[in-house]
Image (cartoon, rainbow, N blue to C red; front, top):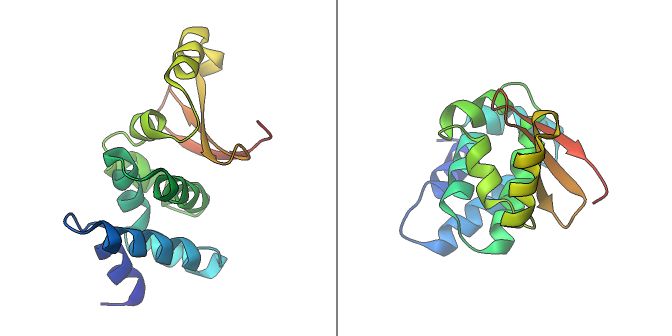
Length: 144
């Protein structure tokens, strides 16, 4: 088992919160280098992060996981892994995205907004743009 697969296995751990935290931080730090992003997608990190976000957890770790999903969705195959493996991916991420209130999500849904909803990924700057039309996630950097 290589390093990335081992960290993905930590993300899938159910019993120990600290182990999950180590997996999230480890993969996030490795993915700061572009050459590691494709390896992380191949190891299943994108789908594991999306499932972890859908399950919830501590706000700090969810924020880091969302930032990692945003980064990995930019690589080849990352976007498709989130949509295919996370049970619809976009809906799960939209429901648990840090910084977006329920009222704001309802307003976006009612307005239609050309099919786009926004979910804050980290500290108001990184925004994951989620399509409601075809369930695709596309990263976007925006000032909120």
